[in-house]
Image 1: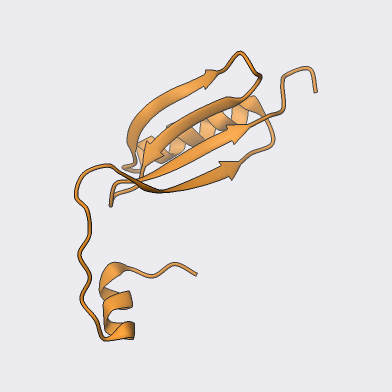
Image 2: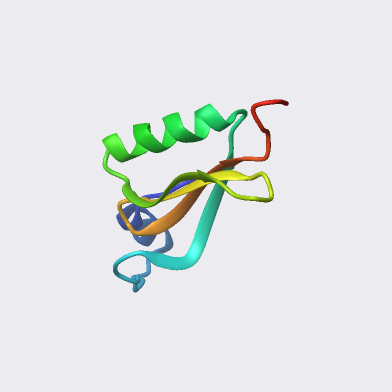
Length: 86
């Protein structure tokens, strides 16, 4: 379950400090089914306000991956190990 910062602080009755800018202390990785989906989800998320970090690319070891940052600067990877021939 995900909570907004204000909601979480109210629920726990505490104030927290948060890093500013892109934050590498937490990363969420999302696995999609095809290389095309990596590209489509990257474009969709950027069009909705995500910050582009690394555009979709295929690495020599077969991973197709990209990175965006959410509005609070946390990194999100969208990737697949499946290749076009799978």
